[in-house]
Structure formats: structure tokens, C-alpha cells
Image (tube, rainbow, N blue to C red; front, top):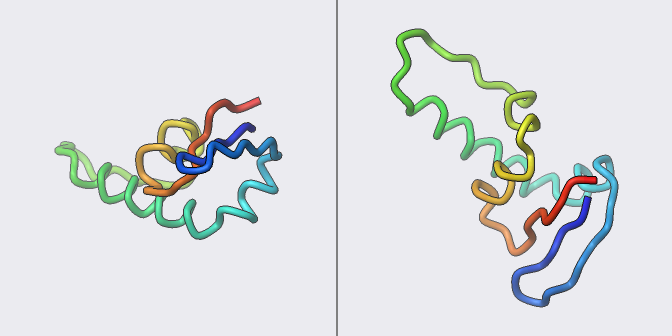
Length: 76
């Protein structure tokens, strides 16, 4: 995957395991934000939100929920 820093324009090309290790704190924050957002939506049944839902669209979820200087440009 390719990540870019919003401030410095630095680019990283790393694998998913490296991403999970290096951005563990940001991933946790993004998942918690994603979970709050999903549970706040009106559903007729209680919806279980798990990490597989988050990782299904990792690029959008990380970029919109992490509040981080880094964003995912593309998943390879």
C-alpha cells in the first residue's frame, strides 16, 4: 500500500503487516470512530460491528476516521 503524509508530502510504500505495526495507534482510533459512527446509524436490528467490516474498505475508513497526517493513496 502507498501512504502519503499531508504535511511533508513524504510517501511510504509498505505492506499491510508493516502498516498494522507502524500505525497501530491510528488504526485503533480509526476503528473506534468507525464503530461509533456505525452504531449511531438507525437500524431495526442491533448491528455487530467488527474489524472485518472496517478492513473491507480500509482505505476510505482509515482516511476518514483516523484523523492522522498520513492517508492511504492506494492499496496494492
